[in-house]
Every structure is written in C-alpha cells, then in structure tokens.
Amino acid sequence: MEGNYSSVLLKNVVGELTRLPGIGQKTALRLALHLLKQSPEIAAALGETIIKLRSEIKYCTICNNISDRDICDVCTNPKRDQTTLCIVEDIRDMLAIENTAQFKGVYHILGGIISPVEGIGPSDLSIAPIVDKVDKGNFKEIIMALPATVEGDTTNFYLYKMLKQFNVNISIIARGIPVGDELDYTDEITLGRSILMRQPYQGIKG
Amino acid sequence: MEGNYSSVLLKNVVGELTRLPGIGQKTALRLALHLLKQSPEIAAALGETIIKLRSEIKYCTICNNISDRDICDVCTNPKRDQTTLCIVEDIRDMLAIENTAQFKGVYHILGGIISPVEGIGPSDLSIAPIVDKVDKGNFKEIIMALPATVEGDTTNFYLYKMLKQFNVNISIIARGIPVGDELDYTDEITLGRSILMRQPYQGIKG
Image 1 (cartoon, helix red, strand yellow):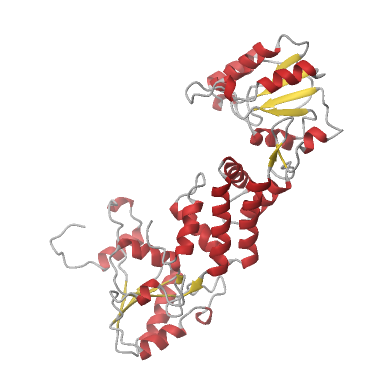
Image 2 (cartoon, rainbow over the protein chains, first blue to last red):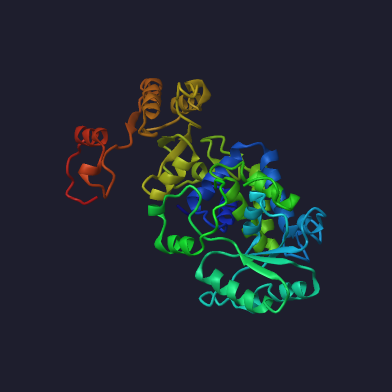
C-alpha cells in the first residue's frame, strides 16, 4: 500500500513512522488513523515527548546509561553497591536486569559487542573506560552479562584478557535451562552447558 | 517490563507509545531506543508530523475522507466519475480500493457498520447524507463495498432498503475465492457463495 493517502499530513506521518523498526506501511497507516480518532492532546503528547526525548536526553558519563542528568540514577544511588560492576551490551539489557531486582551493584554499558561480521571491534566499544574504571576504582567483582552468543563469548574473552591483571573477581552470568523448561525441549548445547556448569544443590526451589 | 527507565523522558515516550494499538511496553521501549540512535532531525520530524496531523487534518464535507482541505482530492478530481458512488466502512477500505486502481468513481465513508453487539445503529453512521446525496444527485450506480461479515450484510440490507426508492443501480462487490487460492483451502461458505454467484466466463484469466 503506497502512494495516495488523500492527505499530505497523513502521508508525512506514515512516512516518518515507517522509518521505525518493524513498522511497515500498513501498520503506520493503522497507527496514524488511530491517532486521528484520539483527542488532539493525546497526539500532541506523543509528538512532544518524542521531540523532547531526542533533544534533551543525556548519557551517564560514568556508565553510558541514558539519563535526564549527567550522572544516572543508578550511579548516584547511595544504596547501590559501588564495588560490583555489571557489564551489559546495551540499555535494554540493563533495564531487563533491573527488572529482575536481583542486582544491587552498578553497570557499565558497552554499546555493543565484538562482531567481526558487522565490523565491530573492541575499539568501537566502551571498553577502555572499563579498564580505567577498574584500575582506578575499588571494585571487588566484575560480572559479564553479555549475550550467550559467539559474539558475546568473544567479548567476554576480550574483557577477561583486559581485566585479569587487576585484583578483582571476574564472573559470568549462568547459562542453563530456562526456568520452567523441559529438558527434552532444550537445545543440546544449552543442556550440555547446564550439565558442565552444574552447581551444588542448595535445597531450595527455582 | 515496567517501572524504572532511568529517565523520565524515556518513560514518557514509552508511556505515550503504549497508548497506540498493538504496541506494548517492550515494543515501545525498542522504538524509543531506536529514536535515540537517530539524528535529532528524524525524531523531531516524527514528533512534529504527528502533532500536525491531528491538529490540521480535515474531513471532506462530501465523502468524509480525510483531507488537507474542506473537500478531498477524490471529490474535486474532474477525472473521477461523479455518477458512481462506492460506499465503504472506513478510510482504510477506501485507500485499499484506491490502490487497486480499478475504481474511478467517488466514495462515501460510512464511519462504521451496523453492529448490535457493539451498539452501533444506523443513526450512528453517515447514512442520512448518502440518502440525501442520492436523492439530490445524479448517480447511476451505488456500489456497496462493505466487509463480507454479518455486520456488513446487515448494513448492506439497510442501505438497500433506504436507496431502492431511487432510480439507481445498487450493486455489491463480488464475494468468492481469493485469487490464487485452492478450492480445498477455501471455507465452505465462501466456496458455496462463489458457486451461487458464478458469472459468465469471459475467456480471460484472473
């Protein structure tokens, strides 16, 4: 579906919406027509928050997290453990970990992972600041929480090489069978790893 | 995923985006983070076109089509056949027909179809203006292009009752097997109708 939208205003919105990932012409048109049915305030609120987001957002100078200030809420929070550093690929992964409420340390957002296929090398990522941070800081543990992929493994190994010179524990998040999954539906590599990385049974569920 | 987005700006955009149909928290976050990676101009263009769409759009006073002017491009186009009127449920259906390039008449957009379940009666729809238009106008044919559903059929019958008093041909778009489909994958009702509504073979494909 393209071309005649009978309105330049409509055509413009559809055009801008289709620049977004996963939104094609049909979805864009559906969203635009939905907006037309809403009050002008709702459409204005959406438009204005989008403009404001991109023009006013800042990146935390310590961890690269998005923030409304120069230093983000996590880094300034006195209740967070400043001696435990969790390295993640991007902001979404950080938010996912935050939502588990299982981690009380601080983060460092790499901005990607090493991927020769996509031409992303260590120098394209925020790795030097980590080394500097660990060198000058007082960290007890570095947790690598990167994707369980070849690229993630490569990045883990590179980080390990850079950080093993320091007196700090380096750990990696556990890989194994997702909670709730059956063994026979789990792929062989995951199942194999979950056997190799077996842990002492603590007598508690989950 | 909810709660802490580490940025009020981000939280606001996610909140506004999730008001849109089919967009949940995860998709909204993905879209917002995508916008952050784009140039400020792209985010501004999206925001501004949305605001402009809702505040400046008009509805054609003749056919209810969305338009940048009081009368839409279809109704003002001298090349369109002003004696053939196609009745559609909404703007999306009109755009779908326009994209087939098979119809050169004009439209009337009902704004819905009769649905007792949803409490939509004839008086909620733009039916009186059609009767008025056909009464005062010079139409040769009225094509009912409504959904092939019970509600569509009900609306077709109601429109027929209102319009049969006038000296005008009333037709309905064909129902049958979708082009490219196999007979044994077609549901029985559609297949039955396609037999009942069989047409003289014209010796051409499609």
